[in-house]
Image 1 (cartoon, helix red, strand yellow):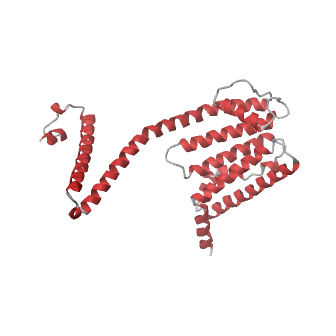
Image 2: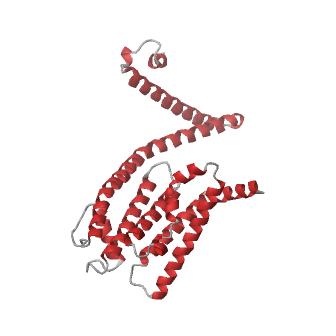
Image 3: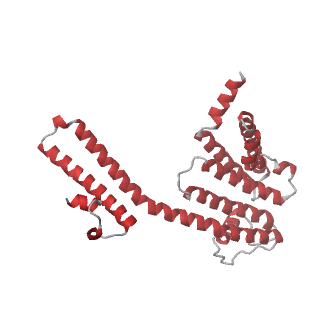
Amino acid sequence: MRKGIVRRVEQVTSTPAWEYLMGLLALIASAALILQHSELGKDHAVALQWVDDTVLVIFTFDYFARFFVAENKWSFFKSNIIELIAIIPFSTVFQSLRILRLVRLFVLFQYVARRFDRHRVENGVTYGLLIFIALVCSGAGGVLMFEKGHNPNIREFGDALWWSLVTITTVGYGDISPVTTEGRMLAGLLMITGIGVIGTVTASLSALFIRRPKEREGSFSDETIQMISEQLNQLETLDEQDFENLQSMLHRAWRKKRDEALGLYYEVKAVTPAEAPLDSPERTLER
């Protein structure tokens, strides 16, 4: 019976849909944590706290369910530190410590990034953008916690979000500046980490744009090969026009492979066709 339960838990918690659900719940919890520091009525504050506690219970169930079915418990513990920190009830146990509420906010965004990262595309653009959004929102929530009531320029989340964005991108318009020690420490941290994250996203975007034309070229070649194969399988039913089209496709495919072979030969040997040996690809093609 235990094996059946383990198998069922693994089937549920290892699916992309479950991972995305956990990431979405982390986003909801992050929004609830940020909104708790906005100008809201008592009823709204209670509702947001209820949302945060509900998500915390689901996170706790998810963590211990996956811990239960893990073959190597210690390996699971080491590789899921973020998830463990995310289920610590900072809002209840450490309600008076604002810095720990900021830690919980940042951990929640890291939790989102890890969940989506497990099923992300091969390039790092998605992951980099998630980290960037996590930093902006964490910085906004943190500066709102530290500066609200002390800084007349930061009175709501929109002010904090604008400050966080211009700080991370190192634009620094100077229209809003932190006045508390915690706020200034947070500003320095955002500047340092923002440079690295923006550099990562920029490099990933450049690599993506460079790779796209090559992918399109490869897909065209695969499509041509598939069409040739289909034509050859129906050779007896082809008319004269079909034969001409097939001949044209075969010729294009041959030229593509020849050009690739010649380019590779020149790159490796670094010789001109006139200097190439008699048994080289270009001399063979000439004959």
